[in-house]
Image (cartoon, rainbow, N blue to C red; front, side):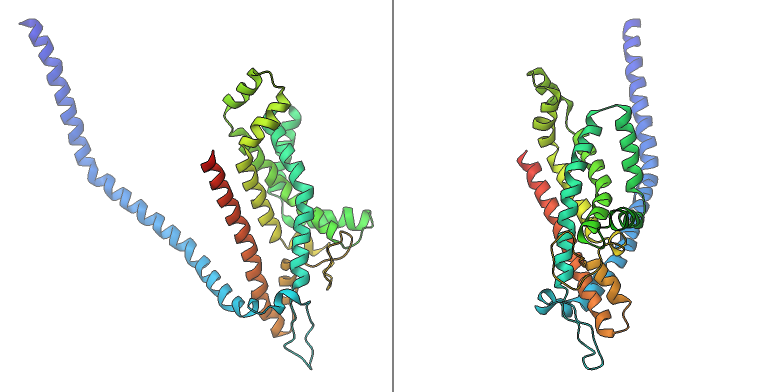
Length: 310
């Protein structure tokens, strides 16, 4: 009988503990539901506060920019300066569109190979040099973009006597893109499972072969996404190119020629005294937003398909 009593008492104690836990849970359920609903409402309000200015900005942009961008001459003609005889003359922004593409292309050629290689090195190495480069990259990522323009003006335009040119603007944008590519490449490479590295090393491959042939292809999705984000940021920057590209009213792709850019055209037209040029600002801004949107959307679609394929 004593043995049966000893067995029954733990069972009863267990039931009592479960009943007590259930009672506490029931009493706190209402409080937890109220807290949950409050947090949902706060999140919805935060989303609303963030979305309303964005929606208003996009509405204003499309409302004022669409009448400007629907004319084919806006993309094919060079800018025209209004006069008393033709106060509404604006021309187009073909030089700014071509200049933006040229600057982005040259900057990408400079920044992407260096940024990816440095990012892979930072992810694969624990040396003091890697730690120093990581700190430099993080510092550069937070530096004001105008400093890149001042650096390019001092080093390329003045010291090397290159003058105002596309190569000077591309150098400024490349320096701006570099830390973004380095940081995103390092994060992408670090996200590759260690088992892939170990499998490659176990098969007798050299460490640099494992990095280039196994790790890098596995991290290519994150790397490309970071590259697209860096390019999107560079396209919309005004400060780095304001001091160094010259803003020429010609269509040129040569590295040593002065060029224009969409952000620079927005700046110049916005401060103009002619209403027609100030109206054209909305069309240029809309084209710039579409460029960035298409690049970002393409990167996300490509990354999603690549991830699904894996």
